[in-house]
Length: 455
Image (tube, rainbow, N blue to C red; front, side):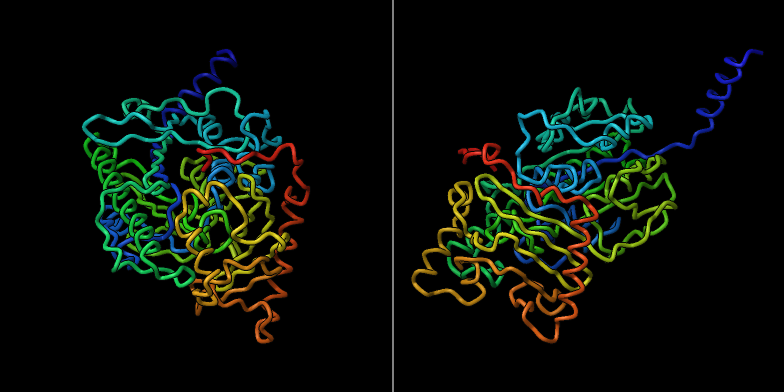
């Protein structure tokens, strides 16, 4: 028997004995904070996501990026946006910028291990849902990043990795009106005003509409016989689209829900207990290596994310990191680190105010202009007026245990000086160790001008 035949037969035997692997379906919401009925949010109706959380695991300390293109570039590569040059929002849409050597999109790794990949736009008409097909990666990709955009291709191409992107919670808010503006709970850093209440209620209405569509997708998964062998993963690409949310480095910008439901046909992995809440610190860059581990694929050598499920689980994070750089025409450089209790923020451009001119926000955020109007009339509380200052503070420190809204800055507190020093050093080391490209100024020629449809 020739060596070629022996090798061929070994390959056949190996593939025949290979253990089945689960499908993976990501459900990605845009601009969505941790606002769920099961988390106590008032005037929001999320029975489908609440049920998904009850059947799976709800991760209560999951953190993404501050805005879509850096965040999506990060969770689709398992790398910090600042390490791969994807940190300035939508700066590489048309310049041919390539990922560094050894860094690839998650779908490439999945295809190498035999998975079919899809970014779904077309679902069965009876389902009543369409995906946006959004990628919004801040780098160029040669070729076809996904094998399909059609739900009808999934059943015949298992195992698959697929994602559905939902735009319901992105501005402009257009969901059916359900929430009573008089009953919603307004964060204390926003003025309690009819404009604020109407805007927040409209956001919650879109959360409820998102939940309705999630329910339809889960029903379709059941109908097609895919629910029992598909890992379902739900999360937001960044925090809510409100003044002190999206684009900044507070929990309201970076903290989103993560829910994972494990399929019945496969034994649950280590560190997964259905029906529980997991309080571990998890970064969005941890999704990529963890999904590859679920697919029984090794973690790529350069990938910065950590596996948080299964036999390949890596040490639990003590800190999560992120940074904000240019968004549209507004140039800022902010870095942050958070542990289980405290968040430290370093503003490298304190001369740029939080309400710096930004055409998109001025047009889309009614509370943005309301804040400026009430500030001029001296009608804001200190926490609200803080957003209107002409400068940002160089350093901010918040105790999330006693101050979940991050409105009491402890950076000058003598009792917290050791915590400040510790987190300052941790952040400085992270900037150096991850080769933070934000240390190098972006050429002025690369900055985008404000555009009517920029998001």
